[in-house]
Amino acid sequence: MGLDNKTIQMASGPNYAALTTLFKDGVPQTHVMWVDTDGENILINTEIHRFKYKNILKDPRVTVMIWKHDNPFKFVEIRGEVIGEITGQEARDNIDKLSQKYWEKPYPFPIQSERIVLVIKSNKEVMFNLKDEDFE
Image (cartoon, rainbow, N blue to C red):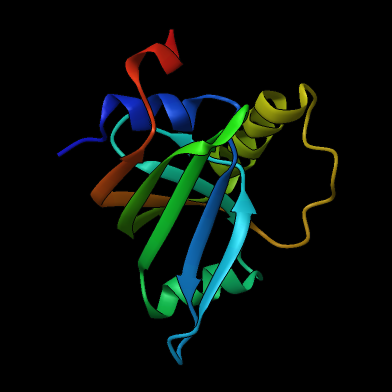
């Protein structure tokens, strides 16, 4: 099952996301993130030294909430799990693509550890206040 078209549009647009992962003791951790999609899955770019990456190695279940850049009360919640990773040059290219999308310039920060794109499969999507006209 692929993503809902509204979810694809939300992840493709200049909208921010909140990624929630779980520490090994079950305590949730949430970060505001840039978000992308391959049309079937949600993509989140991070670095391997970050807690969010370490958390998904122990428990791949995540929640991603993407809100409209011009109205945070219009959003989609995606409950799913990390099913794969993209590494190497493709992950580095993705962070530059995201930087262009959000900041209209190449990624300006030094990379502290290896970049990695988390491939997240949706198990459930919940829409809040999103209408077709929001995407016209």
